[in-house]
Length: 336
Image (cartoon, rainbow, N blue to C red; front, side):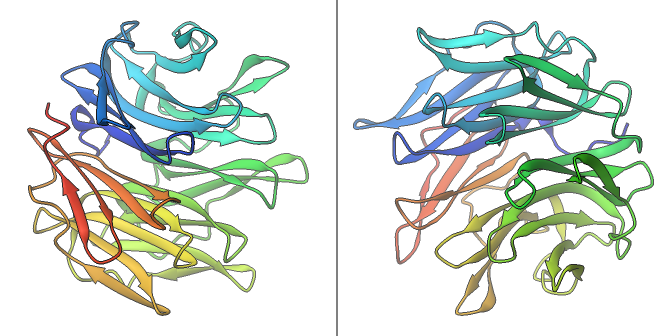
């Protein structure tokens, strides 16, 4: 199975309201590691996650019912693992997800309709699998998503439907979209035919459009963007031409700008950021101090009114945010 993420350098950033800051989960030589901020600055926790080492993708999510973040990841036993904060600190669930081993990407999402997290992943059978909480227990759906997955996936909660949706790279090399319609899963594999997928996919909910949107690495090696306009899917394959894409793509909704923002690994090896300024796309082409060769992950930081991001390279991670006048870097706190 083709999978373009470099998962040895996988990470996931999530905004943590209880700290008014971002938290970062990452793979440090097979060890799940959590970076978080206290009054003394960045703290590192790699001792709380001894249940199973990491061998693939990581996806973090903030859980309001616990007032803390949680994380799903691909363990060395081949199965999905889940760490969350219980009454006695970090708790590990490595037994609830045994219906199918993990074969690729993982995408976690908080589901307000269930007051719990859910998670999608590519199974070892090449199909998309979905775990969700129903009647206080984990339930598994491994039969809904008929089109096999050929690469990345990205899940999103859609308030207009009060349910999750998922975008993924089908084995026909196009984007596929599953969403809830009239109480049942509906499939759209026909609206995204302007460009085939070559790599990473990043979906998000766009309040300005009351619908989801999706960015992805296209077969022409440029970033493409589908969004809903006047009730129909629209395609933008022309805006993001500053550099070709050679790796990961990440997006988040920038509340301050009232629009989505996207980052990707450019041909220069640096991160390229596109965000809206005064109603027009603005491009910044040099956002890292070192070359990126792994995951790019981003979130919106309420306390700064700007996106925060974390990128991986061979020796360290780079965290950065905007302080109102320039991007601020921290390359020293996240060594492999």
